[in-house]
Length: 154
Image (cartoon, rainbow, N blue to C red; front, top):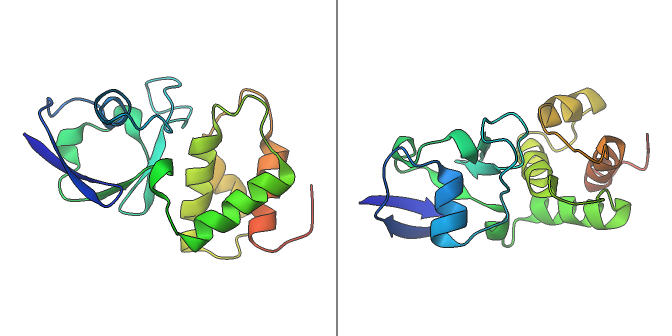
């Protein structure tokens, strides 16, 4: 039996310790916001927060989590930084298919929790490794700029 803190709720699970967190979230608990993209941690569609840091849930065995807090896109709740990011997404509409967006959003939120006014370079670094098959990188960066109060588009 494994107990995880997911979206500020303790959840008891009868799963193997080597099961990836993504499968627990999607298949066992029913939280489908984090997406399966590659299964190797390369595309970042599966990004969630582990103690506030973005991690690739497709390669993270649940047995390695311990007492750390897991936050998924469904668990953002009243986080004011999350709301700023979501407002930027609404304003700039950076999606086409939207498949990568939960991971992109989770990375952006983690960035702003660490740095309220990141530079273009810092935004690029935070989102490196997040693959958008539709190529909406510029719009995604512009949505983050809205969240930090910048009116400068790329």
